[in-house]
Length: 195
Figure 1: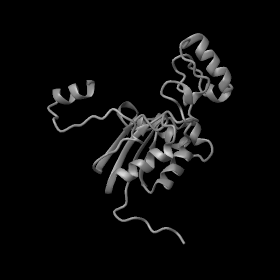
Figure 2: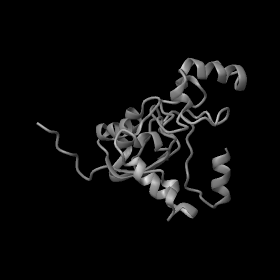
Figure 3: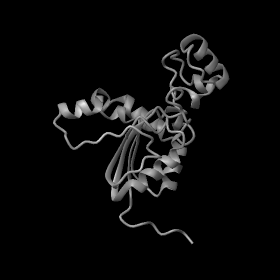
Figure 4: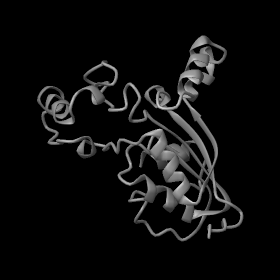
């Protein structure tokens, strides 16, 4: 309802809003563009999610996405609501984090693991995401880590340079890769399968 009201306010009468499971909904058409905002780290099966996107795109279509924090990043556990300790989700066992979360901050939430909490977390890493993309049949046309440091006051800053440097280090970069921005493309023709 809120999305429809906003669309009407903006004069957008062609927008259609569907409340349902993206993986299960029967669409009657293909799409030129699919936009996914702040979702990939919450999707239970990112590979299935990407394959579904690939199936729904027209040849030459694009997926535009920004999401995060990535699992290995300082706040990949989405715990900022009750701790500012970076990497708390990696330092402490999941059982301990979820027990503290339930007892102190979310007494009505029965979640015992990250995937059960409201919104769920799939513990997606940069490496895993790239593997899911490769398996989906989509092409990774653009991929940026920490794009928030490419705009505004950070645009030409030491912070941006440091982020670019650190995230480029194999094995270490993932621990400082907060947000991912990507453009995925569906090839005009299906790619040949290797023999």
